[in-house]
Image (cartoon, rainbow, N blue to C red):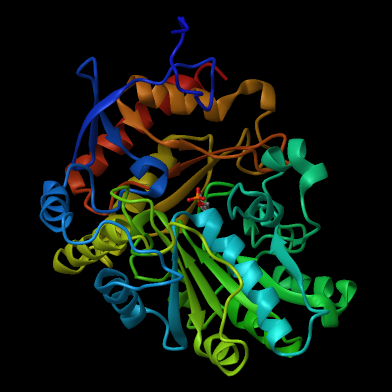
Length: 447
Ligand SMILES: Cc1ncc(COP(=O)(O)O)c(C=O)c1O
């Protein structure tokens, strides 16, 4: 046998050996040295119901000998049927079907393919193009990365990416259309019409947007009329609208679906992360009645399929997660906890000059840092500020996610994401915010 002087795992960063986590309970994780961390990011926004819910594993152990695997092209099973019904029952009224997959990238890639086939079914095969937004994130598989507007992750792979037109994000703090005008004038929504007209409406199939932006610019929350305008433009040019709720959905903003706050019905919604809450690799694509009807009146068959789509153990766990969230009010708890978190952050901002903007909804909060509040000038990349904040927080046993550079074409600009589990309580929020205050005070002094 070959001898190795390194771990057998090909880590995401081979220069940093990650600590080994051996236990998780509630909002805390514990590593093999006994160190406890407050999981202020819910581990990439995933663990909505919190760590260490043994009732899920107990239930799975009992159910496990009933059905192991069912191939979705041939059979269905009660857990897939049950979870699809439970999700649809709380979805916007026009949603009519759920297609389960294993992750958010797969969900978005499936959505683009479904949009393409929808127009083929309707005799418009020339409609296939996708439009998305800069600073949006839809995943890392090639089509999902092509949709993503995260420049720093796209650049290496750009020769491999399908062409996707990106429009301006609803980023009021640095908006090229309205930053000087004293408020959003919806030009960021009009940008969609310009892009559709430039591409040729007869070629455009679908528009993707995260209702509230995640890690590429955490917390960007568009104007109250933004999605109504997006919906109108999509309807005018017969373009489908996909709301990517992989991060912002399933309770994170204080409602089952973030888009409901705009009272707009998308044509498709993608879910991920909290739907499995880390207990199963589970994600979903919800499709509207119009799309379902087109397929059932046409070939009836979505030419697409993943081996683990709707796999029994994932759907079983998804149902248990749904039960827990319903029982404990976790589909809406983030509203109250988010208000509390926001109050404490606003108060912190009064004492901390480098906080330029705090934004988001519920327990999806972004904090952007600036050298000067008036000019909103970002820190230079060489300051490595985001990385320093994340590292210093970790040294204080609190985990937060570092955001992607925001300005100067993905080169500069610092922000962090706070997205704790939905079960977080006031004491734990205090712990999170006071660690942040200490870290920012310490770092501000050295900038
Ligand atoms: C909004 C959004 N869409 C899609 C994805 C991709 O999901 P996954 O990493 O499960 O493929 C993510 C992941 O962070 C996300 O935040």
